[in-house]
Amino acid sequence: MSKSLQNLIQLNKLINHPYQIDFDYSLSLFDKLTDFITKDHKFAIKSLESDQWVNESVKVDLEIKSIDSANPMNVVSGRIEARLFLTCQNCLNIFENEIDVPVKIALCSDQNAYQGNKDYEPWEIEGCSIKIIDLIEELLLISIPLYVKHDDDEVCEVLKKPQMNNDLMTFPFANLKNQLNNDK
Ligand SMILES: [Zn+2]
Image (cartoon, rainbow, N blue to C red; front, side, top):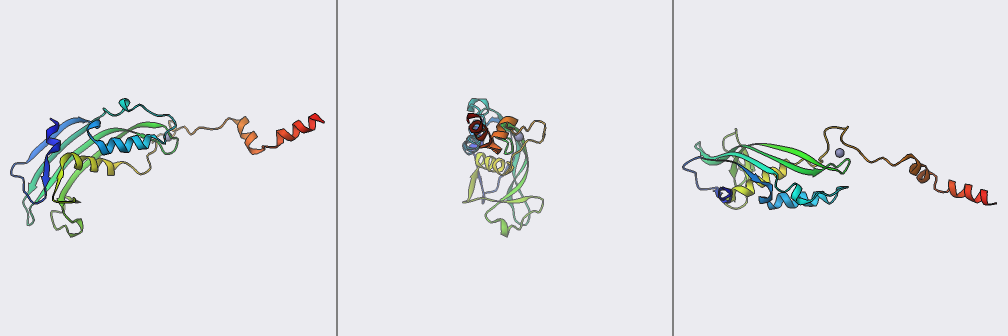
């Protein structure tokens, strides 16, 4: 099943028969994505064992085909959904994020020079081909918000220091001074 993820889409080779990739893959197949998440978790208050998140599913439902217009090109459309455990940048707790990526892209070598079908977003690739797994991974990585944060303020609990500690921090010498006075 995962063999099709290793297939290449070639920029200059049109696809005779459109094909579908409709399957749930394990997140663990995606090296760059799991690296990203591992690094992200280093900032968390409480770490999460990798076996608790690395086997979450990446649901892929994509169609890959060539469209025949003035400039025939290869296009990818559909949807990718993934559940990623990421660190809230507000409270630094790791939580579950549903990432939902609608896909409608046309592969090209230079997106600024794109002259193709306007229904598709030009997607620049380096070299003349891209592996499907790398494409899926890139699409997921750019869909992760720069500032991941709990939606619900109730859940997002920033640690508050106990009142007593606060007083000590605000007036570090006050207690000391009192003590000195008492010692006299
Ligand atoms: Zn939070």
